Image (tube, rainbow, N blue to C red):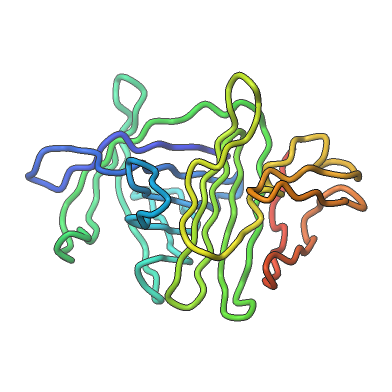
Length: 232
């Protein structure tokens, strides 16, 4: 099931809870995710605290398997036990590395579901093409992407306005481009051919010869991205 989760707080026991970042996870119906832990200011000149692409394994405990990780070339996984709180938020308890000191510690995170305004989900992936690995996951009115080339990580977050319905890129770090603008096309353009106004910073137009389908490939800055999941 597709999901958008915003982190409310993190606590490294026994310290008090806080939220030093703008953390959002977009998860596709097939449980592929992009987890971006960005500076709270969303300042493009500040690198993400952490950028992760991976897959969720449902169970007790829950497991989040990292497949692309901004911090390492040998990704691992996190695990935690989720408890539903009275206000509808989710309390996650587990153990992971504290980036402040590199120590494995007990932690508590509180997560809040973000409303999905429409049932569109799209996943595009770049797998070891010219040394690049990346993923874009769009769910409803939120789209996030990351790509890692060597030691360099680039990431983006787009949000669609509630009133005007226009997409806005609220954060971009790094110099590698990714197909978030394609993922942000509306249902009509994803499901048929025609000229599409992409929402990227260049305002480029692209002609879609047919609807976007699973297995389609797109070249972005010389890297090949494949549509691996689509739900309209």
